[in-house]
Image (tube, rainbow, N blue to C red; front, top):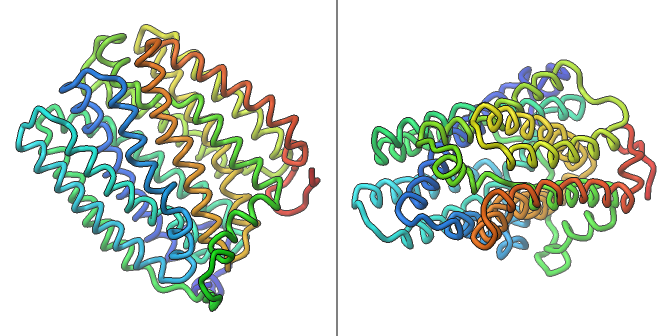
Length: 414
C-alpha cells in the first residue's frame, strides 16, 4: 500500500494521488487505442472489402496473450508493474509510428498491418496483468469497487470520444489519426511514471511450472470467480459485433468514417452513463442475479442492433449494449480483485486478460468469420441470441455465483 492510502482513508478512489495518475494513464491509452482501432478497421475494409480480414485483426491481437499467458502473469508478480507498463507503452508507441509509416506509404497490401498488430498484441499481453494488478495497490479495499468503476469509466469515456474523433481525424488523413494516437501514448508514458512505487510484498518463490500455473489453480478452485470471468468471456465472444461496424456503416447504413466513429462511440456512451449511476448507487445486494440479468440484456440489445437498418436505432441499441456490459464488468472485476491474494494477483490477472481477450479480440474473429460465410446481419443476431443462452446456462451451472449477494467473500459456494 502507498502512504496516501494510510494517511487519508476514503471510499473514493480519486482521494489518492497515485490512482489519479493511474486513471489518467488509462484515459490516455484508451483514447489512443480507440483512435487507432477505428482507423485500422476502416483502412483494412476500405482497401480489401473483406469481412474475414476484420476478424483477423482481433485474432492478431489475441494470440500473443494466449501464447504468453504463463510468462506475462509471472512477470507482473515478479517485477515493478509501473516499469512494465511504461515499457509496454513504449512498444505501443513504436507500433503507432509503424501504422503512421504504413499509411504514408499508401500501400495496397495490408499484411504489414497484421505484423504490427502482433507486436501491439504482445505489448498488450504484458500490459493487462500489470495494470490490473497495480490498481489494488493504489487504493484500500474499501475504495476498490469505486476505483474499478471509475477506471472503467475512463476507458468508456475514451470509447465515446475516441472513435468519433478517430473517424474525423481519419477523414482528414490517416497520418493525422495515427500521429494523434502516438502523441497520446507519449503522454501516457509520462503519467504512468509519475505514479509512486507502491509498497507491495515481493514474491521470492523459485520460478517453476507450479508457480507459473498458480493463477489457473486459484481460478479453477474458486467457482464464483471462474463463473464470473467465463460468463463474461463466452457472452461477449458470442455477442461481440464491434469488428463488423465498418460493414454496417458502409454497406447497411450507407455511412462514412465519421458515422462509423459514432457507432463505435455508442457503447461507451451507454457504459459511461451506467458507470456514473453505479458510482452514485453502487451494487450492494443481489450481485449475482444482476450479473446474469444484464448479460442477458447485453445479448438482447445486440440482437436489436443486428436487425436495425437505420442509424437512429443502431446507435441507441449499441448504447444499451454498453450499459449492460458495464454492469457485468464492474461485478466481475471487483470480485476478481477483492478475492485474489496479492502474491498471485499478476498470474490470476494474466488468465483474466486472456479471458477478456478471448471475449473481445477472439469475438471479433468469430464475428468476421461468420459474417464472411453467412453475412453480417445473421452473424450479429445469432451471436446476440447465443449470449442470452449463455446467461441462462451459466446461471444453472454456477448457482453459487447466481446466489452471490455482495461483492466480497460472503458467499454461497456452489
